[in-house]
Image 1 (tube, rainbow, N blue to C red):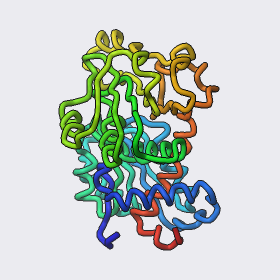
Image 2: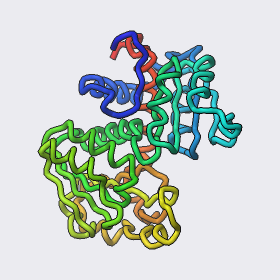
Image 3: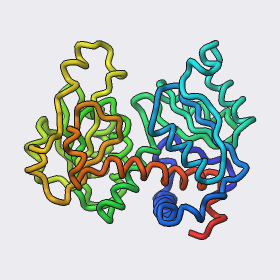
Image 4: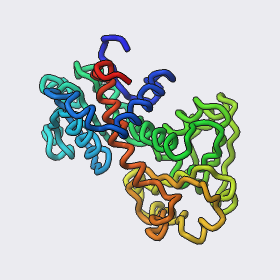
Length: 312
């Protein structure tokens, strides 16, 4: 990588070679975390979360701490100067004076992209509205690689809120890089993937289909990626209430699935996966959450140029 400031706003900010190197580094950290425990000593991560988060924020913080670095920041807009009317640009320009790298979540699409032009340090998009969530995509790729042993030639079912689900959009874009992947899009009419995602699929020449019932395709899937219907993205409560329980994965539905199916979920879940499924060996969403910490460790090292200090 060059010496210029590197940001991660979209998964497309990483070349294929960089992505493979980062996934390899993530796996190596998982195998020997102690080897990396002081790599970021003296470095600081700022977590600027203008929107609530549990896994993403805490996994970033855990990642930096386990690399030997330290963390500062805020977990809601109300606890920052945004509550006083400060612009995002001024916030990140100020925080860039205190931290070496920034992880930022914002409800407004494009906010992290605007922030990286002012920060003076690497900025990671930790989710911007219904737009992108590239570190969840990295998490998903590492999970798939570890669960399936490959990233190509699979049938991938994506179920639930495919309209506002930024994790779905980013994952489709990433998996299009690998040959032979087929996509099954499972959603109600109101929550279909946006037009630009269909255009990406068509441009790549990928095989894909849209269906309304997961039961009709369950036996064909290598991966089932469940998502919640996101209450915070709806304009009215009535539409949310009508759609929120459209899909509920339970033991009965899993009877039709293959024995090597991998059930994923970016979390948090609400009702879309029964807790009875948690003990099924095909449920890998908590293993997925753990992968999130390790891949963020690899990302922090990479954006700070510290991956070169440890032989990969």
